[in-house]
Image 1: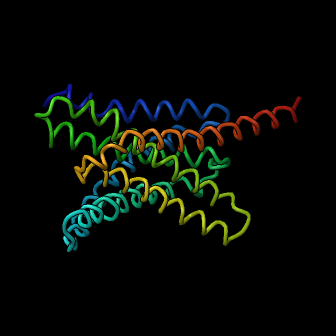
Image 2 (image 1 turned 180 degrees about the vertical axis):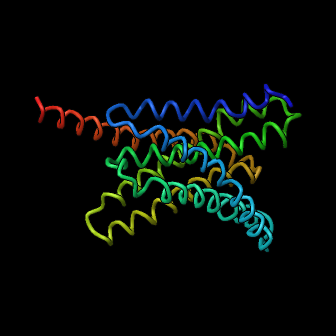
Image 3 (image 1 turned 180 degrees about the horizontal axis):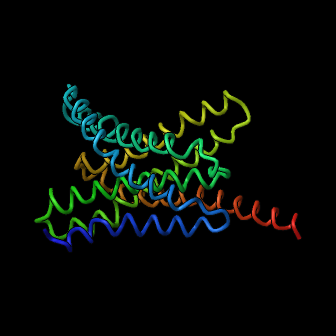
Length: 235
């Protein structure tokens, strides 16, 4: 057993989870709940692998269309679906989910649990002979899972605190399909191995960071404002 490979594989997910945990400064989520969601996010890779194999079996397409099927349906849909199931099962109706930032925190923990186990499978087992794989995935793949999750959590919170049933259902749908779209595009660019498409990979990654950090910052400011208002009431 190569302990160094395990450390390389596990560290990015834990580091990013810690970063999100520290971002939630004003009304922190129960640590035991976050750990549970992280663990079940990791476990969710098992049904994801099964579903992906079944869906891959029905890939009747060839060329770029076949790659799109794998990127958007096999990988994007399956992985975002199982991560969302974890959040919906353990956090969505929990009493601790009481502000919009919470949706992002829970979604990120579920996603990073998934990404950490996936990273172990890639770094320790599948590509253990590729010395740069751990660094590549630490820079791109694991953070990408977090960014997709920020979008998921953003819309889950809009659904949770929606004013009408129609609005809540609308945002629940977006909490799945927008992350699937982003995940699918990310994978499609890489899987296509097209030099023309790869030109837009770095700009797309920059877009993901900008797009999702704005969402995170918006809910962070709302959390801070709620905290300040609540404290003012008791002064």
